Length: 200
Image 1 (cartoon, one colour):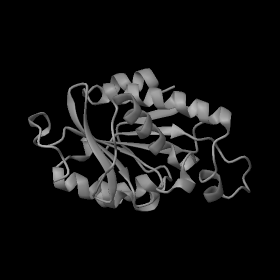
Image 2: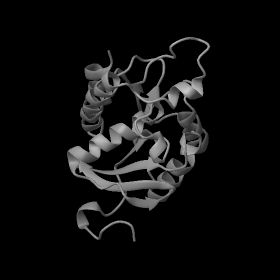
Image 3: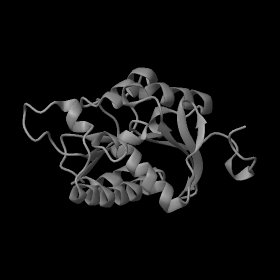
């Protein structure tokens, strides 16, 4: 059994928090892994060990603002993230509106963030696959800015798989702190407050 037998955590999880990225050391610190970076910052703050392998993901459980949360880092690679999210959501009967997804966004400057209650994939393949497998776009998401391509001819895949500069990495680290603050508000059900505080 994956979870410890603890009365505090029995029953359905109230929220699932998913960070998107690609598994493997070669992808650590790349732009496409902004979701993983934020989840790792959450793990550091809450002293979590995200090391249980289930639903094609590394996962753990925790309480945030008193809410039972399932933390997920899909290990399927970005384009197939929906498989992991669907499997966990179906098993624990977590509805889309209680699944918070953290992803990268090339349309936002590095370190900026944008919270949405629902919506399209915006060209982000991980979100696209989640929408496909959940058959719903009604899940909230936090989009973390990774910056636009340096020029139109630059290959998009090369750009999102490139590493942040030292300055950019510092900005992403600060952004991750804001993402955690937003998550702590969102799990209380007050997404409007989170949007008001963090959407610039």
